Image (cartoon, rainbow, N blue to C red; front, side, top):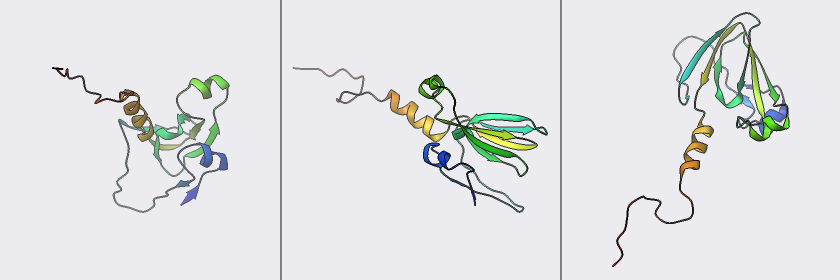
Length: 125
């Protein structure tokens, strides 16, 4: 196991401290939500992503978790307080629908205010 480089990412990043390192040969199953994107980074090519979108990266890819700058980005960006910067060379895998984003989307569509929440007319009398 490896630990995130910055302690604040563990407290506020939503993804926690621990990264799982996998080595050797064979197959591995990794959970991802939405579209799985495989991206090959060239030497010193940089990619900045929402921390929740990162699924995995190959050995040789450098990573850094940074706090989002700017009050407007933090308040209205919708991606959380932290972004992850990945620097090649190597392969990274990203998910298009992180679990927390999916839960938020579902929750925003659940009717509030009580009742059955169904659009079924009910006859009275």
